Every structure is written in C-alpha cells, then in structure tokens.
Image (cartoon, rainbow, N blue to C red; front, side, top):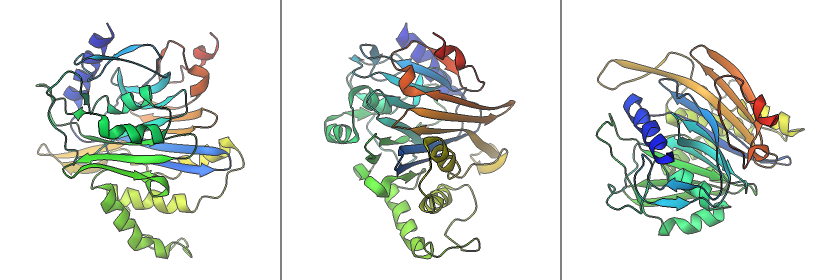
Length: 332
C-alpha cells in the first residue's frame, strides 16, 4: 500500500512539475542551539503535508514503488510534497535534511533494484544516520542512480544539505566531477546551481566590503531572484545576525534572512513563454528544541503553523500545512 501511495505521489510530482525549484537553505549556530530556515520557491502549490515515517517501517529505496525495501532505523517527521515525496525532514536524533534543485546533478541511470535514487536519497540519510559525520562517512558506499519515468516532463535533479544538533552541516552535490561535500561554516548557506564551489568564489569577492557596511553598501547582490544573487543576499544578512535572546527570537531572525521571491515574479522562458514563480513556503526550525514554524503564502492560503518535530516523533499522522490543522496532533 505504501509503495502504491508513493508511486502515485511521485508520478503526480513529475507530471505537474514544469520548472526547477529555486530555493534557499541556511543554518545558524547560536547560544540557543542550531537554527535553520529554508524557502521553497515554485511555480505551483506543492500542497505540503506534515507526516511521519516511523522506525521499523519498510520503505521503497527508489520511490515510485520501485526497487528493494529497506528498514527505517530512526523516526522521522517530514514535509511531504505532492503526497509522499520527502521534501525536508528531521529525524529523532536531530539530523535535518533539505532537498533543493540542482541542474548539474550527474548520476547514472537506474540499473539495479538496490540503488538509491535522487528522489529517496535525502529520506534515506534521515532514515539511517544520526549525525552529519555518520552520513558523510557512508556516502562513498552509497549507490545513487537516477530514476527516470516516461511521464517526466523534465529531469528532476537535486542537491542536499544535512545539518545536525551539534552544529555540523554539509552540502552534498553529485555532478560530472563526482561527489562533492562542502562542510562546516562555509556550508551554512546554499541555493541552486551553479556549483557550490562557484558560489563560494563569488562570495569571497564581496565579503571584504561587509565589515563596515551600511544601508548603501553594494554587498554583491544583484537584487534579483537568481541563485547567485540569493546566495550572496542570504550570506550577507546572516553575517549580520546577533545572538538571539530566545529560540523564538532566533527563529524570527533567521526566517528574515533568505530572499523571498515575490508572487508573480518573472523567472525564465523554457520555450512556452515566460514562467513565473514565488516563495510558496518558508520553514524555520530549532534542531535543539524541535520548535518549527511553517509560513505558507501561496494562492488563497496565507497561514503560519507552529509545531514541534520531537513531540510528533513516533505518531501516525498526515496533516496539511497550507492551513492550520496541526492542533489535533497534540490532543491525542
């Protein structure tokens, strides 16, 4: 049943997707613990659902009902897109994963039933590893291959960030040069392509101007929604954050840092005329306490939902995040 549900959800994802996600993910180590925030920018509603994946569950290793089953080691609370596709999540050990679009992703086509695909890679890390260190050490042994379906209008290509309660963080990219892992303080901000290596070089050019900046300083952002500009924007404003007075204060601060793409913003012509997209939602979380704030701003929905991922571990639920339907979870 789970395989069939996942297959339907993933087919829906691929059929309705027409452009690449353009998102931002950031992490901040503070005296209040590790805080994170990410935006999900997209052309349409992904209808995110907050759901559980519990330890001991059997999951399809490739998604879409394909491949072998594997056993989940840790409880997970995740944002599920288009049904059962794990978009973001936190496990019971405090490891968090964000998936962002990355055009240069280069991996072999699926040719075996025991390989992990780009759709399940992030989920698999959450299900099996407690820390960034564990996950990074396991990467060379993981066989990651691309799942391609006939209904797919375009390749879905991704890269990932993983962050844990200790403050360790890594950005993982798989491209034509192979596996690249960027770790530590340099990895606290990520967007989309070009490569993370290119983003770091761009940032180094502008960082010297940030020390004595004021409102008129040209800190390197172009002021548009390109990935390069959003990377510089988030890096600059994160560098100006001062220690939060509480977890709540810290979540508010970090949520203000990513560039939020305005509604109806023009993006790119993919051959069918100019495409527009916007920030559908922003998710800010404390990996220490589990406190989370989802801000949903799309179509007719304008809503803020607060929940705690650790309080929800081990439960059985699926709750929409477009509207505030989370309260029943805490009355069980």
